[in-house]
Length: 329
Image (cartoon, rainbow, N blue to C red; front, top):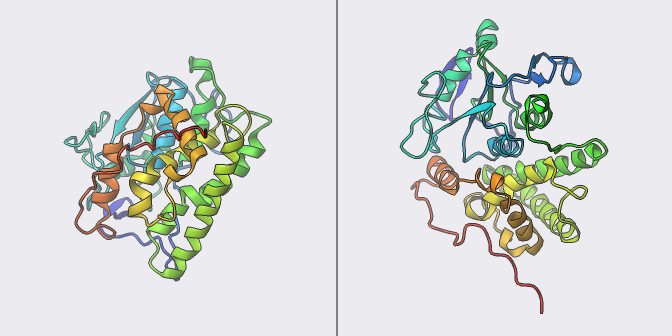
């Protein structure tokens, strides 16, 4: 996938690796906030007032980071307040596209062909001489100001969690006061070793880099198995953003990461508590409705030709969600 330099798209591979072959994720480039009253966001960041119909979300059903935003949007009942456009699962030389043959929706706002055109269109970026960086999802777009507000998934889910409550969002707090420190601690470990850890395994270009990622990944999966064997949820007695952030990686693990990213010491199917957790999450129809395995498998296997030169999408696993383990007799 290419990148933008000074507002212009440049096709070709973007290097996200350091000298020892380790994958290093680039920081998101748009970090403004939305609040109920327009007051300053975290750290005094530029803020927009929440309004129904003002914002639009660009996502990929394949992407675990965008998936977080879709889940919180669904849980909070924001479907009628925040529209969605879904990119095509197959990433080509122009990056994410708005083709519709494989289940994308097209660009409902601007009729763009490529997501990079949305980045180029963003008013603030063009005023600053043009955006330089990767073109990623999710993207939270301000229809009124014609600009990208935020493209960092961890912040978009917190915006959705609270900013629209006074406008009729469904009740529910997934980052509750009193649990924030514990949630942050779980998030930090899961992000580094699981959410991003699977990519560090898959895109490692040296044995040293792969070995440095695979051990911590499975150490954390073992830790999560123990934690979720003792409780239904990662933090407290309810669903929180920690569970959501873990779920979007676990649901992709056996269909994609186990084979495609060489994360093959064990499957999620081999972890009884993690399987129960997946079913607990999928039992919520709002969450289940955001899972699109066809997009997930097509994107990874058919787009990453450096990892899978044939582009063949494997048939399995069957079933895609591991069956619940039998209770011990």
